[in-house]
Every structure is written in C-alpha cells, then in structure tokens.
Image 1 (spheres, one colour):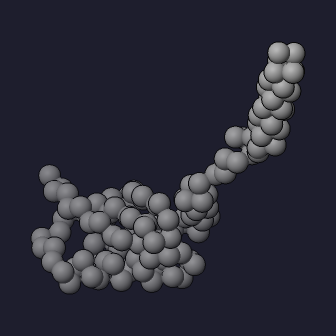
Image 2: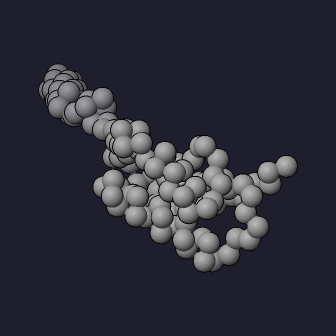
Length: 129
C-alpha cells in the first residue's frame, strides 16, 4: 500500500512539473499579438496622403477638368488592393461611364505620381440647391 501511495505521489508531482513547464515555456499572449499589417498600411497611407497634399491635388485636378467636387474626399483604406475614395460632385448634369472613366483616370495619374496604389473611386452626385 505504501508503494502505491508513493507511486501516485510521484506521478502527481511529475504531472504538475510538466504542466508548469508547458505553461511557463509558452510565449506570453502580449508577445504573440502583433499589429495587424492592414492597420499599419492604413496608418502609413494616411500619413502619405497628408504629406503629399493628395486630397488637394485631386480637388484641383477635378476642378481643372470642369467638375465641382466638395472640398473633402472620403477614404476607406484596408490594404493596397482595397483602397476606396468617395468624391461628392455638385452641378453635374449627366454621369455616365465616360465621366466615371475620366475621373478614375485623373485619380490614377495623381496616385501614381505620388507613389500610391490605385483607388476605387465612388462618385456621389449632390444637387446644388
């Protein structure tokens, strides 16, 4: 009987030591959590948009092409392949594929000149009443 108790005690001690080693040899949760690379990209692009005056360049180029954009542009940036820009235009009588294509080309040229990836352009028409 003493041998059985001694064996159970040794087995229990061995299980506790193995559990402790497993627990303390695992990397902590804080060390294993890394920032989402998409968040880093969005922050980086946000800074680049500001430092290059990208929004102002877009507004000036659209006005030069005869459009009437708002003074603000909305951005949704998730990754280099998923960048959406929302532009609100006033006083536009017709909006068709050629208009959309022209605006997209203006944006693509300015983005390329500022070392940015292309944007998906979402144009919203606003009545100027």
